Image 1 (tube, rainbow, N blue to C red):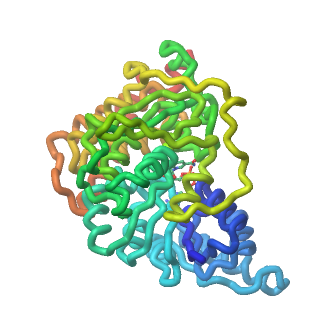
Image 2: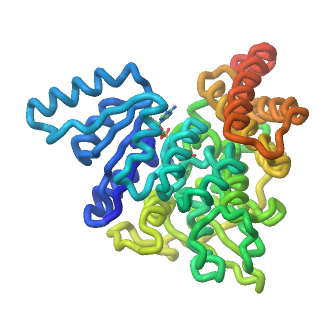
Image 3: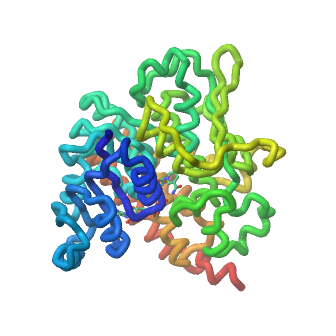
Length: 417
Ligand code: NAD
Ligand code: MG
């Protein structure tokens, strides 16, 4: 039995993690939950899983959460009120809760950084869904892992696929990821990409893309931010940087292959030219489960893969001119230091501005590029945590000011005419 904490329990990753816990009660027990805003769902989750501690992001929600749980306890609908905490210290308390063995990080964005670090410093193993933490702060997170002995298990489907393929290679004897040491025998990684919402759109049509279009993913059901990242292919660019930090390969050895069916979740090529692929339906529960259960395989009743019903698996190279975010991500990764943190924060802010309809879809990469360009002169090659937080805040301010300065040319309305 493994005791788990779920950060971001009300989101797409969080709810799927809790479904796994419910389906495998002999294997997992939930001891901590953290959530952003959705009190109704959080309360349902508390009733269902009876965690020891619950954190809510906004301190103003604490009194209401407490009162509603008290009412339920009075009506005998909830056995016991968990320890309730709030705000950033509250998130850290829940993330480092002493009875937890493993922390599933399902918070979206760089907001996950400090709670993930709190969990690592407390020696917890991490099932990493919150890729932004590693992308923004790889140079900070990797030494912390070494120091505490925490292990990082990828829950992102592509990185889980690579991790699964690596089992059985000599390197896999060392289960702790993120050593930064090139993996013996591993020559190349091929990350597969579905192509996102606009994969069948000609590039010229992207100027008509709306928020609704960009938030409708053809294969995966996910939170809004990552769905937009999939439409720009920035998600794949971020995953290239994530793979670099997790598996220690140079950027020249991390490639992207468009695979619209999302059945092969990624591939590795070994030194002898053998290529291994991991397959499954596009369902995040499998990579989340493997990150929670490694090295064991837990039997599930989930739908089994049947290749004849799929018939064809197809592959192509990404169109770099249609998806400029790919090159931006490779460039930021190669620049290293604080640049990936700037790329990540600029992307988070640009996507937020797009979701608020303040900028057009095709301007997301322009805003990010301009922000990275300005940062070049201030790049720090070996950042500490404070530096990462500082450049993250700076990049968000820079994007907002860029959008204000250029509102006449990049606003959504301009493109609707
Ligand atoms: P989501 O938007 O569905 O859920 C995010 C969760 O984080 C929610 O519980 C929300 O309340 C919480 N949250 C948001 N802002 C917060 C803040 N400032 N402080 C504390 N909590 C906050 O997102 P998601 O799609 O589940 O993605 C979560 C992470 O997992 C992201 O980093 C994403 O890139 C990664 N990921 C997601 C998927 C997927 O299928 N959804 C796949 C691979 C990787
Ligand atoms: Mg992924």
